[in-house]
Image (cartoon, rainbow, N blue to C red; front, side, top):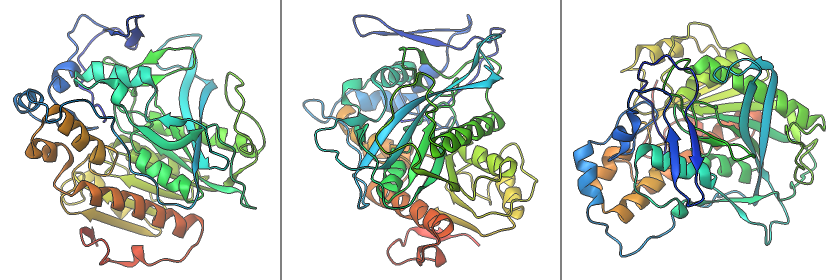
Length: 426
């Protein structure tokens, strides 16, 4: 479940902070005297990464009559690859860059996670979708009345040894949408890891719900300076530096926490791809234009704003839904500057939130909260959630396999009888 921002004007450039009391309650300290609007936005609705929301009146009705007698923990679909998945968090500090919000003397800090094919996972705990503090913060922030204890577990085992396959692992970096978090596309991430990729996800601090090892929680800032796609791209380039450090055998964690067995030296810095959703999709394109280390990029319904007018000669795929070339001039303009291999696909019934974890989590949460089928469709589109999951598992994997591993396959050649909902946009 992702959040989106409406930014009231205000002079204070200090980010909102979140504190959890001993009783488990979350207090979000506002940064200005202006009333925080996002609680009202999602006090009765989930919102997307760009601000579309279910009407408040409709959502309030939905919460009035829970459909189930008791709570049920949310779940994510299992990945389909041959390998179990491991994960480890990283606390990254960019000492070359001042913090854009915290002020002088502070450097840019990011929380990231590495996902990878693992071995010896028996009895190792599975990682949560979000940390408890971050999930509690996002639910409090948007006013969505779901117990954070019901948050899903991922398929990844914390700290599991890396499965070494006789070669280095191709690497993918992931960028989330506005006001979201690095777990927002866990279905895709763990699917790719189960097929032999190392995937590095990152929270873009001050435009994400993020929890640091010392317990600090940060939420999306409500006042300037706001982070744009170019700021996200700068974060991604720093993450690429961390990838190179891991590949060279260096631990980039700012606190020096031990890494899983086999992770150092396991990543292949010569085979790197990137993907992102919404603002993260735009950031993916901007990062590729600025950094030759990325060999292939995927935008998941990115708006491509600000307008991108520079040519890109490496493979790029767009999974569009709301931000289509027909509807958004910036997306159409960007398409004309793709000079290498390119592909634009779109699933019937998909909206901005369809290609992500929302496709499966919102229907489950809606059942718990007594929402109607129409209210759920308003949030995730009319594409069947099970089909949405299969599409987001299959197409990114096929794209990166083709362009980073040079593996043959026909899924990207044209329309497939296995996925009749997916249209190829010429």
